Structures are given as C-alpha cells and as structure tokens.
Image 1 (tube, rainbow, N blue to C red):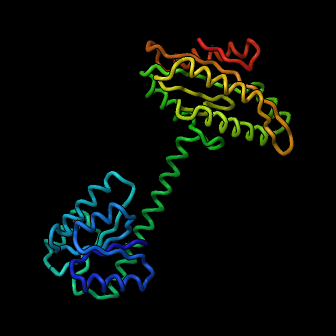
Image 2 (cartoon, rainbow, N blue to C red):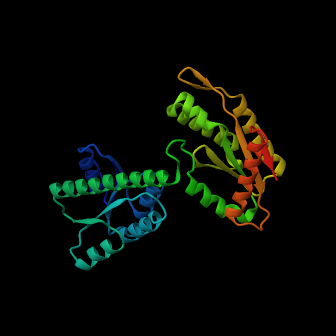
Image 3 (cartoon, rainbow, N blue to C red):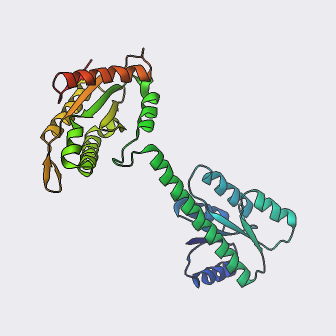
Length: 295
C-alpha cells in the first residue's frame, strides 16, 4: 500500500516515514500542500496522512482538492488528518470536506497504527468493490461466449449512432445447426468464438460489432465511412471465413457466412432499418448463401 505523509515539520515527517516503513508500507513524503497535490497527481496513493496546518495551502484545501479530483475517477484516497488542535470545529470541518479519520498530536503510535490498518482495510474493500463493479458492467454489456458486445449493448450503440446514417450489416453463419449436429455443441461454440475474433479484428475502428443472437451477428459502420469501404470490409469478412479452416480437436470445420446490409437514410427507426437488413440477409440465403446483399 502506498502512503503519502504530508507534514511541514521535517523531524515529524522523517519520523512518520520510518514508523510506517516498519510495517512494510511504501512511503512517500511531502513538505507542503503543493508538493502533496503534485505527488498525488502522479502517483497511485492509497492512504494519506495529512497535516492540517501548513504554510501555503492548508490540509483542508489539499483534502478538498483531492476529493474534487476523485469525483471524476475510480480512485479513492483514504485521508487521515493530523492536527495539534483539539477544537471540534476543525475536526468536523475536516471530516465534512472529505477526510476519513483524524489523529490528534502528539499521537499514540499504537492508535496511529490501528487507524492506518482500518484505512488499509477500507481501501482494500473499495478496490474489491470497484473490481466487482467493472466485472459486472462488462458482463452486462458483453456476450459470455464470444466476448463481444451482446444484443442489448450493440442495439443501444446502434440506436445512438442512427442519426449519423450508418451502414448496417447482419451476418449469419450458414447451416450452423449442421455443425452442432455433426461435431457437437463444443465445436459450435468454438466456431462462434473464432468467428467473432476474426470479424472483430477486421472491423477494427471502422465500426461496432456484436452478437445479435445464436449464430447471428450485427455490424454497423460509422456514418462517415464510404459505402465502398464498408462493402470492401464485408467482402473481406465473407472471403476470409470461406477460406478459413476452423480446426477443433483435429477436426477441420468449414463455414460460410451470409450478409444482409443496408444504409440508413434518415427516414427509418432502428427496428425498421434492422428489418431491411434482415430482409437482405434472407435474400442472400435464398440466392445460395455465402454472399452479400446490400440495398
């Protein structure tokens, strides 16, 4: 854990540094509020022991500035105020502007150590909650099998992009049921995952890509893309999948993909434009599969 000691007294600063190092903390020091903010901006500080009364900017101002900054970030610094004052108003003010705890000088070493341990537990808990929230957020927007956007997320992103008249393509793996029936569902899952990796790499920054359901996928290209560029990318996908050898446990599996594509011209809502792309996909299937219908 990274601890920043902010203390204008050199003697107390060095004493606190040595004290915390005994417990195997990584300790940084600052002699005033300006230096403290600079270190905090450039280092990952977990816990700060902050003297309230310092020349330049006070500990109150440092604490307030850190809380403002952290409002827009995922990071949280646990702040313990160090004060020689016993005035309740100062303590209340410090806690109100964002400090988590306080220790009154001269402090008892055991008390300070325990309060640091409490801060360490809270920082650790915060990091675990943050990690869990990120995991839940990812799982709510991504398909579990292919690791690309799920239906809800790709639909939402397309809806937000619709006013820019994107090119939309629905991709469907041909005769996918035969793969499951012939090679088993594990092989089918492998094909879906590999297909998603290939297409995601080809699409790159030109658009967004997600799984729309089963063996059906959705791409939309951002509105500033040329029609010829989008069709070239779709043809590249079709051809690479046609040529690709999906090798699962020594078994070679061949797959083709049919694609129905269209461009929103501003007069359709999201469900209408998806229906047009789906009609074009149906036509591609009807005409023999392994092809692109764009209109």
